[in-house]
Picture 1 (tube, helix red, strand yellow):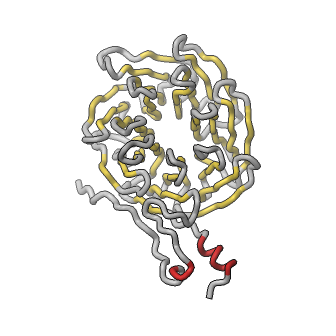
Picture 2 (cartoon, rainbow, N blue to C red; picture 1 turned 45 degrees about the horizontal axis):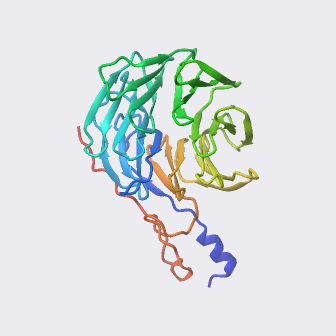
Picture 3 (cartoon, rainbow, N blue to C red; picture 1 turned 30 degrees about the horizontal axis):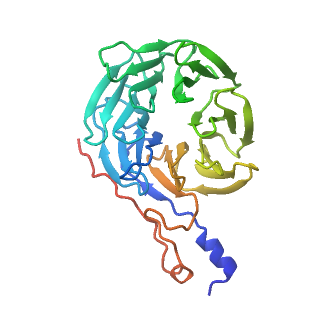
Length: 338
């Protein structure tokens, strides 16, 4: 028999969806916006084979084949028609996300770490180990990119913000910088004692989420004024704020995923599912789940509201608890043999 307390404990067990297929550590992931066909998820991996999946189930759709080195960054445009990837083969690539075809290869002078589209998908921003930000006009592929110099070491992440009027960049030089798109000049700067491990921009409210050491910090993206910060139990590699700003999640070196209340900073849950450090974590655009990528080569999808029927998760009733212990699995890609 299940007492109410026992039922509550069992019902709240988090059962992540495990997405396999990669053969090396997963180092970046990104969701599209919500489209008429749902939303989508792209993953960057050191195996050089970024993958596209259905966002709510994790089911494999396709693999983008063409890079000759580790892929460090991956992104989708809002309507999931285009993908972009950043790689160790000194290129960024733009892909047709519907066909999987390579559309464009953008040669760089060093490893590329980050790629992101403007809202209209007409421009692509890149950054990497040559310390330069580049803006490519995708409607005029023969034109040389605009270049922004200023960082003194490798750029780890670069993002558009403020309706694409500004750019935020984080680098190994322990700074985050805000740049004006028109003047190409640095507007503001944040300096830290250690390198920033991740950066997320939330357009609604102009919130910047960053992680460094054990700290998860929230800044106003335009003034770069600190809103609040939280110290986690372990070094954190990535954090993401829920679209409604109720919660934020973080993952790092102790293999765990942490969920915190954004208003009072209280730790609500922590789950260990991965078998290696968590490198990246992001909320889905509808806020119903968050995805994590790890050193163990897998992606995992976690429910924001545990026990809710959503995607491949089914609400478990008390009478089903004795028999329903199976972990749901998303469809994985077929083995790719050399």
